[in-house]
Amino acid sequence: MSNIYEKNTITEDGQLMLKKAEKDQIETVWDRYQAQLPQCGYCEMGLSCRVCNMGPCRVDPFGEGPQKGVCGADADIIVARNLGRMIAAGAAAHSDHGRDLVEVLENVAEGNAPGYAITDVEKLKQVALDYGINIDEKAPLRIAGELAHAMQGDYGTRKKELTLVKRAPKKRRELWRNAGIMPRGIDRETSEMMHRTHMGVDNGWQSLLLHALRNALSDGWGGSLIATEVSDILFGTPKPTPNTVNIGVLKEDEVNIVVHGHNPVVSEMILQACQEPDLLRMAKEKGAKGINLAGLCCTGSELLMRHGIPVAGNHLMTELVIATGAVEMMLVDYQCIMPSLGTVASCYHTRMISTSDKARFPGMEHREFHPDNSRELARELIREAIENYEQRGQVYIPVEPVQSVGGFSVEAIISALGGTPAPLLEAIKAGKIRGVAGVVGCNNPKIRHDHGHVTLTQRLIENDILVVDTGCAAIATAKAGLKMADAIRYAGPGLKEVCGALGIPPVLHMGSCVDNVRILILASALADALGCDISDLPVAGSAPEWYSEKAVSIGTYFVASGVYTVLGPMPPITGSMNVVKLLTEGLNDVVGAAFAVEPDPEKAALLIRRHIESKRRALGLDAESV
Ligand code: BF8
Ligand code: SF4
Image (cartoon, rainbow, N blue to C red; front, side):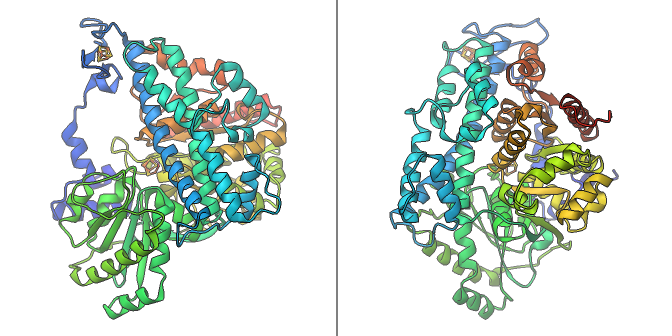
């Protein structure tokens, strides 16, 4: 690595844009990370507590200073409480996103959401049946209204078990009941976590962590699953679609509009407006060849999955996309939107628009989207973006985009397999595919940008492990060319043969972060077909560059669902060896899976390969040791 740009990111567009940002005197996330070093050691270990106003407190990890907070909480309690609150925040974020979609579904049913519609009626009916709704001779809008109402019930406290846990294998559900971690209500589990972690409530580090599993399950089998299912109902269930990725998707001669955030409720309306003939005409009158919509982060993946809309980058690229000087307007909703973006945009002509009633940002204009005004507001904003094209200064778009294929919902994968998971199972049994790994999660300036995702994924596919990915990981491997039509050349011989025959890449883009539930559903389908539990399967999960609280919730519901999960960056738990041991070993006895932490993706690949081979041996499949 010869320079700072190469040290920060493996991507060519990232390196070139970092150089440009430096020239333009733009402060980036990497600069601010450096300015924070050294970060607080107590916080890194999870040993600081500011739950109440007798504190803040900290426990000395060397045993010399205080070993207890003012209230008497020791290291185990403080670490478990902090982790529990991270999971509660992550589960809340995903689940509140799901709730917003349910509200749109309800508004569609009531005729109050012009521009939105029921796109996948089949899925609407199938999910309604899961909820026990009688669909006979009912119009889709009526079913939608009843479904929205039933889903709202899952958020509350009326139920003993969430409805959609019925999609998990029977053995898994029994395990959750016996362990006392069956999720009951989506909001209930998060609310209970906040209660338990209040000073003077749950001071058993084990019971806190058990509830943390239940809280995370209320996300994975509740809020996130509802978000994905309702998005499919409203906007369509994804099918394999070609697309392009990296900063080169921006166009020098078109009006560039970028959507960033998570909820497709806004980005889908923006997409519709970008395609309207009168607005396209207006763009041409202003001298542009067209309107180019591109995505960032998870709302980008939502549009990519369903419509093949290009994605300009993942989390650490969001500031640099603005530094191209080519973006007329960026619209954001919520989650993972750096509060620095407004400042970056003030150096260019880019107009920054915040759209959600619950998310405001400095240096952004707030224009709130609601189901009843979305269509009109989207048109108005696109008109304003076109007007802004004339203000553009010099642009710098230094790379060509990379081709990729996305859109692998579970339905699309099963359909590529000929309508049943059997061919995938046969390939796994025959050892052509050793197993399946989910590579998910964020970027984090603590890890060289995209290095963790790309290196881990390369090592896994070389060794005949099929990779399914989501979120910023999915964008990273797409940019690296691992989802091009001919990407099977990077795969081992068995995986190459199977993917070649099916006409799919060896790395399947399964969507945004809420879409991690698609991986759970795929794992459940494989477990059901084999008559085993998820924890018996040769599958694993990984979050090589995670940063967010949502990622902690995801990792935890993967493990609680029986999936061995390897984290890149260490979570703030090393202040308690009891907590570390429970999460990395003890959970095997509770849920049949545990966490590992390994920042080096080469070593993480070995851990995953060993795990997959051991599961193959336990299942009596033809095994080969690593
Ligand atoms: O939900 S992967 S950085 S953008 S948290 Fe955020 Fe992480 Fe990206 Fe999407 Ni997920
Ligand atoms: Fe300190 Fe206890 Fe209050 Fe935490 S809850 S800040 S450890 S007194």
